[in-house]
Amino acid sequence: GAGVSQSPSNKVTEKGKDVELRCDPISGHTALYWYRQSLGQGLEFLIYFQGNSAPDKSGLPSDRFSAERTGGSVSTLTIQRTQQEDSAVYLCASSSNIGAGETQYFGPGTRLLVL
Amino acid sequence: GENVEQHPSTLSVQEGDSAVIKCTYSDSASNYFPWYKQELGKGPQLIIDIRSNVGEKKDQRIAVTLNKTAKHFSLHITETQPEDSAVYFCAATPTSGTYKYIFGTGTRLKVLA
Image 1 (tube, rainbow over the protein chains, first blue to last red):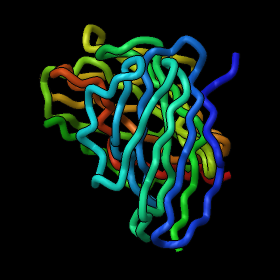
Image 2: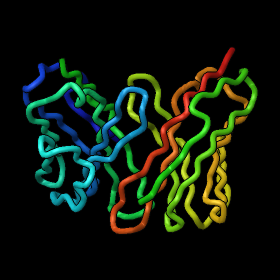
Image 3: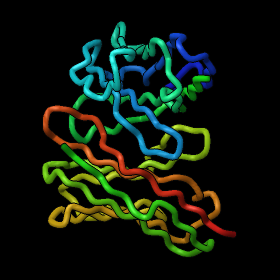
Image 4: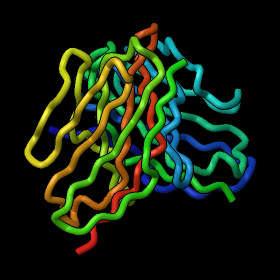
């Protein structure tokens, strides 16, 4: 079946502009996660959703970052007033349930470049 | 909170040789340890995982071992092939109220033909 999809695949924006990144999880997956991967670095947790609720937003780096999930499916990560340090690959993952030991399946990522 | 260390950061092996990547974790309550392979320009893909109730798991040329006492786990790739060249990430899942993965910093594996 279809995997996790993300759009756009690449985004170039100017400093100070807002951007929206979209994630379509695997159909039926209740949990959705956002991670950030800076150049040559590991994956940094941002936020996760259980259904439409976000029990853990602890990884969001500042109040310029927000995310929502509607209908228990699509999620949007919004970055307001982008800064150059926001340049990274933003990865979305989903798992069938919430719980320790649930495998997370990743999308291809959105490569964001802030000029 | 949980911390995962991964070594080495880069690894070059000759085709046909074995490769070993090691990770240590800090939270003794972690009970799930996946390994991901990330090729250039792609998202991470799960290649193997292990749960804390087993010590070893194998899938063809790939194996993972877990030592709960020492809090470390390792990825073993035998008979390496050029297509194994990629960045490999280990992760651990803590059990205290959140289910985010804590990732290691990655190992860039290069298999030389």
